[in-house]
Image 1 (cartoon, helix red, strand yellow):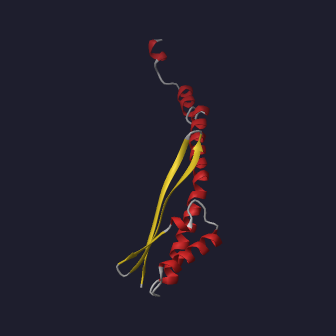
Image 2 (cartoon, one colour; image 1 turned 90 degrees about the vertical axis):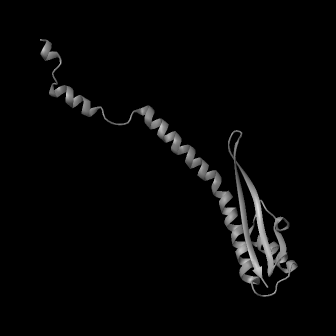
Image 3 (cartoon, helix red, strand yellow; image 1 turned 120 degrees about the vertical axis):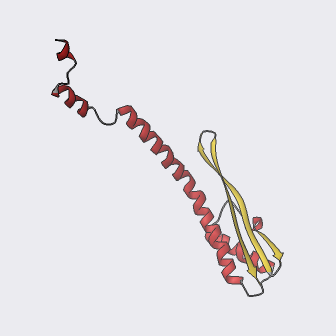
Length: 135
């Protein structure tokens, strides 16, 4: 009788194999984590879309004026016009710095964008786009 109690019966082995899998609590935790990451992606998408617009404006100004002996006022006017066309927000044309450097002009668009996440938790993303326009 003692030996029968501790032997492995086929019914007992089958029940252990059927118990494999995810519990409801494990599924809820997994879905919660995935939901938080998806929500973070949704909140950060407009931030990066705005940066892509700024990047496109600065790159376009570089292509337009590189090697054409540009003045800083012409570059600033082009940036302002392109920001209006692209509907760029969070940074204005006045925030973009155009400085004289050896051999040309340096255009710097450096700014921070704060995006709310949940309650008092925010994302702060720093962007820095620089190009040098040669004379």
